[in-house]
Structures are given as structure tokens and as C-alpha cells.
Amino acid sequence: MTSENRQVSVRNLKIKKCNTKIRLIVFSIFAIGLIAVALFADSLCPYDPYAQDLSQSYQGLSAAHIMGTDAYGRDMFSRVIVGARASILSTLALVFIIALVGTAVGTVSGYIGGKVDAVVMRISDFFLAFPGLVFALAVAALLGGGVLNAIIALAVISWPKYARVARSQTLSLKVSSFVQAAVLAGDNPPQIIFRHILPNIFGPILVTAMLDIGTMTMELAGLSFLGLGAQPPIAEWGSMMSNGRSMLQTYPWVVLSPGLAIFISVVIFNLLGDTVRDYFDPK
Amino acid sequence: MKDIITVNNLTKYFKAYGKADTAAVNNVSFTLHEGETLALVGESGSGKSTIARLLTGLIKATDGNIRIYDKDICKMKRNKALELYGQIQMVFQNPAESFNPRKTLGYGIGEPLRNRGYNSAAIANKVAELLEMCGLPAELAFKYPHQVSGGQCQRAAIARALAVEPKILICDEATSSLDVTVQKQIIELLDKLRKSKNLSIIFICHNLALVQQFCNRVVVLYDGQIVEQGTPDEIINNPQAEYTKLLVDSIL
Image (cartoon, rainbow over all chains, first blue to last red):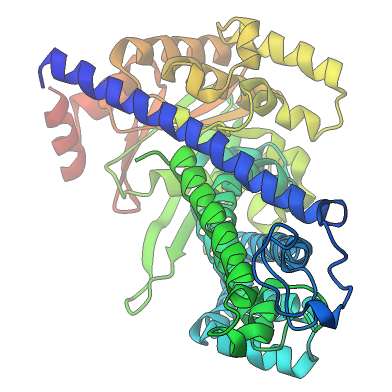
């Protein structure tokens, strides 16, 4: 490679890194915006999302109701905003829970190794071998409808992914020189896990979690669509789509508004996840 | 001279799936005298590193015993004998990998002290003292492993190993990944520390020329067994075993 070429490729690399940083900032702002909408939903919505007014049912798009109204005359725009709480905040809670549980299980099982590890990993294989949403449906049906039960159902099937990532990282760190040196320094196993292993697997876990937010938003909305998540009258995007689906041809905004909200948030979180991955693991 | 470590008929099998278990170390016996430098020489896979891990209690022996100060460590649980295990410390092969990339060098060097209940001011003092003893500026304590050179990292690893004033230092190919001039500096440092701290060193290596420079005795390993032991001059001038002859031929 000539020196000129090398300079060009170094510059390309720098531009790429710089672009990643800009993308990271932009998508983070979008994501924070979505979360802010979810947090301050009550003060942002122009109408009471639960106030019914049958004389106003199925109003089209207008300045007063920019997303129209639904069968009970409730303002769609307000319902979509309030729906962000059930959809986005519960997705974040769900991802946080599975990342925490999966990492804990994977790290401990990988560190202990032997029979414990074999048993734990077979259990996680069992969950991975099942088609996820079908299993979640079964769990949700067993527990009954509700946002909390939908979260539990999805958490039960989703933690093994994190356990796998954490375990494989732990296995390779466990035999590394600095962990062995820590053993010689007199660290006990919890100290080794907290001081040496967890700080070094935080990156991959964070990337996995960021990439998972989009998927989990869809799955949570999916469960609600099937009637196993949020129950009416709670505003939640999946259940709002489900309620309006028979009106898709006559009053499309009833379905399209929450659909658009799901679409936008999934796209934003997926792009953010991709960017975080590029940032931590530039290849 | 007093024997500080006595190894008798040490054997370690590793489980292999679908095959017979492999003997990484097979019926090995040797002693380490107080204040000497003993070299373990052998090719890759000859069991050198396994012996190092057995001596430090990182893995358990299948058979045989290891006596340190007349106490059989094979019968002890590691966490029950921290005092005794503190007497035997190790320097690893890859300097860049022997410190946690997310923590400063000072954190790593101070770790054994922290685990022995020192307060943070005492740790900071001791870390600075250790770094200077190993020929490094005290500011290095605030650097991360990727910010320093391989040689500096290896010196810091020696500082960490000496933090708890051990009597025995095991260097597992501690110079293999360094270039020749840095190798020489590290060896001079080890020799200086051996004299000033009355250390006994087990130097694991595959370079006979290096061993000749500063080791008192050599143990030659091949396929998990000892094929020959003696002084470096005896081994180099009059090798007996086939493998040793090959090894000597390869340096001259």
C-alpha cells in the first residue's frame, strides 16, 4: 500500500468514526424524545384520551383532531401519545429485566462451570428451541391479560439470549491472565465477577439490549394485538390497532395512527441499536 | 540450602471427551531451593504452564503432592489458605492481557493489598513504592494497560506479584512476548529483586540461552515428564536425553 493510499484509508476510518458519533447523538436524541413523550404523556395530550363522546365518533383528520377520533369519539392523537407509556416504557422495563436476569444467570453459570453450567444451559436451550411468540402466548394465556403479564411472558422466553452472550464472554475471560492474577491476589468469586468480568462484558450486553428494544416493542404490541397484553380501555398501540382493525377500509386512521407510532419507534430504536453496535465494535 | 518447594510424583490429567484422558504432567518430582532461580524448559505442550498453575493452586493435581514450607497444598482449599498462597505469586506470559483493560494499573497492583484490608492511602503509597522498585514512574498507576508498552506492563505485573511480599515468584514465559532488549532488562530486574527480597524464582521458558544467563538449575520437560535436570552448563555442554540434545542444537 502506498503512503498516499494509507492516508486516504486512515482518513476514511476517521470519517466513519466521526459519522458514527454524529449518528449516535442524533438517534439518541430521537430515542430520548420518544421516552420523554412517554414520561410526560399526560401533559402533552390535547384531550383526555379516555373521554368518550359518541357524537364525535370516527371523525376524520382535522385541525381539532389531527389523527381523527375512534369509535367512541376519543381523540386518536391523545391516545397515541398516552399509548407510548404502555408501549415504550414497558418495553424498556422488559429489556432491562431480561438483560439483568440473563447476564446474571450467564455470568454465574459460566464462572462456576461444570454441572451447574450444563444444567443452566440446557434450560436456556429449552427456551430457545421453542418458537418465542407461541410460548409467550401460552404463558400470557395462562397468566391472563394485562401489561405486566405480557412483560412476564416475554421475559420468560427472552432471557436466554443474554445468558448466552454473558456466558460465552465469561468463559473466555475466566481463563485470561488478569482474572487468574486476581485469583492469585486473593479475590473471591463475587469480587472477580463484579470487578473483572462484568465491566468487560458490559459493552456486548448493552449492544444486544439496544438491538432488542425494537424487536421487543413489536412483540409486546403483538401480544396486545392478540388481546393478551394491555386490556381496553388502556391506550396501548397494539390493542388500539386490534380494536380498530375491522374499520381499516372505512376509517383507516384508527389503525394507521398507532401503526405509525409503532413503526417510528421501532425504526428509531433499531437505528440506535445499530449505531451503538458500530460504536462499540467498529469493523 | 533449604528446600522451599518439594514436588513429589505430581500428575495432572485433563479430561478429554471421546478419548483417553491426556496426562499434561506425568509423575514429576523436583525441588526449589531457597534463593535460587530454577528454570523449567520444554516445548509447547510439555506441561510447563500446567505445573505453574498447579503450584499456584489455580488447578488441582490428579495425584502426587506439592509441599510449600512442608505444608501439602494439594490437601488445602485455596480460600482457606490465602496466607500460604500469598507466598507464591505469578507473572504471566502476555503483559497486555495480564491487567484488566477497564481498570488502571494502580488498581491491579493494589488489588492484593485491598483484599488484605489495607486502606486506600496505604495502598496508594505501597503501589508507588512497588512501581519505583520495578523501575517505573509512580504516575503509571493512573494509566490503563493499553496506554503503556509491553515492557512497562510486564514490570507492573512484577510489581503486582511482589505486592504481598511473596517468597516464591513463578514467571510463566514472562519474557517470551517481549523483544530482546526488554527481555534483558526484565531479567536483570528479576535478578536484582531476587537478591534484595531473597526471592526464589521458578522461570518457565523455552530459550536455553536466556536460561544460561541467570538460572542456577534447569529442569527439562518433555511430554509432561522430566527428561533431565542439572545446572545450565551441564545441560548445554553435556545433554543426555534426546530432546535436550535437540534443544541445545537449536540454540547453537
